[in-house]
Image 1 (cartoon, rainbow, N blue to C red):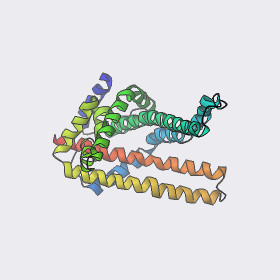
Image 2 (image 1 turned 120 degrees about the horizontal axis):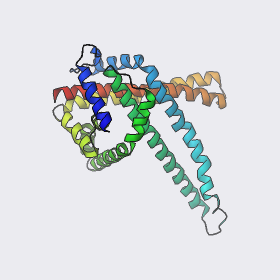
Image 3 (image 1 turned 90 degrees about the horizontal axis):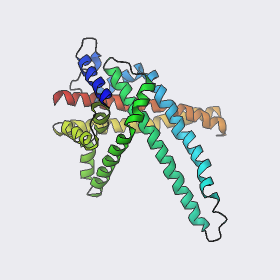
Image 4 (image 1 turned 60 degrees about the vertical axis):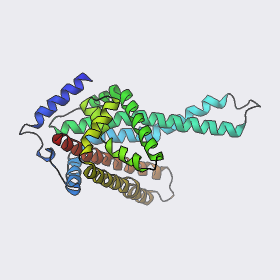
Amino acid sequence: MEEIIEQEEEWDDDFDDDSSLELFRPQAKGFFQLLFESFKYLTIKLPSIAIIVIPVFFVVEFLVPSLVEFLVPEITRDITGWEWVDKGILYWVNKIIMIGTEALFAAIIGGIAWIALIRVIAASMHGEKLPPIQALKDGVSMLPMFIVTAIIFYILIIIGLVFFIIPGIVLAIWFAFWQFSFVLRGHGAMSALMYSKKLVDDNFVRVSLNIVGIMFIMLILNYYAIDLIANTIALQVDADEGFVYTIVNAILVGFGRLFEGLRIIFLLTLFMDLESKD
């Protein structure tokens, strides 16, 4: 963690240099300008993002579910012959175990990838090149506290939503930058949340509008545009929706998930802007 913080300090020094990327010098930008520049930068750095996103997508979406489906029945197979076992209950036990195991593996692998993406994109914004393998190693080392912080974050949001919804929304905006605070600035669990709140406090309305805007864009991209395009093309290749359809659809959706880089670039640029005003 100390090495990571030292590297971030070096990046901060480099950021003031004339060779730094002019595009990401902190300044107050409107939503559409920030979105356009983030999309432009995404296209430039697409290969380095794809190296992380696409393999992780296929592992999480296909390998993990297949592995869980194969292993979990083995766990309970020995007791299926016991007369006192309620087969209906056993079915739901299996189902819960499968869903929980799949979610756990997805969270672990996804967390590592998310940290790696933040590290790679942040490095490139500061004119540095961080190899994806090294970024993934950083993700592995930072994962335990990352998960702890994520759990605290979601518990607070859920509690806030239970109390008349509005407090949960406010907390979500306050703590929106906890991932960057943790991954790039070396803050611990509660410290990362409080650092995010500190940055947002004086810019709550602006941050809220930007976060709602990027969430809406990502929702349209992920669950409508990408899925619709992938499904349409896959149907053209295999109208019977067989094996070929599944493979083509999966490949296209996997490439579509590259737009997660857009979310990171957008929020990271906003994060750096807020820091510059702190």
